[in-house]
Length: 191
Image (cartoon, rainbow, N blue to C red; front, side, top):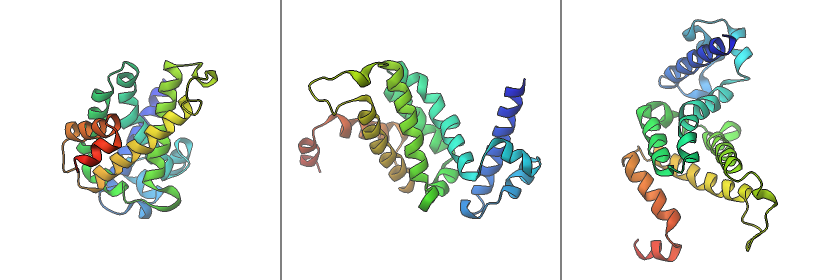
């Protein structure tokens, strides 16, 4: 019961924050504005989140990455990527504004951290003892693989958002897969 109440309040605060972010720059949104819009008292916010950037991180984890995790674990990576891009596209205005965050609490930093955590957990679940395995390429371990894919995925997500989401979720997924599966010299020949 307590977990359900916490989740309900988290969602209420997230929806309030997203609405406000579509009306003004995220940097200017106050905790009081978020709580007033959500219909809760200010201390309630701090019982759930440290600041609005932690709330943004919660939104990315809960509403974008958590739903795709089972697909990734089931080997349905394409379906997971399409779902991720579709979810972002449905709230285009919010994510377009969030993508403008720079500096210490940059959107890029938050997204990369969230993707890295999700990929690390997925790789750990898939290969729990991989970190001690030494193969042909010792550098090629779960930690470095997760970091590589988090960096590349973060770039694609943010560039797609900042570019106005001008191609469909399926198309950006296909582009990402093409770049990741094709040797660089082959990609360069097609430019």
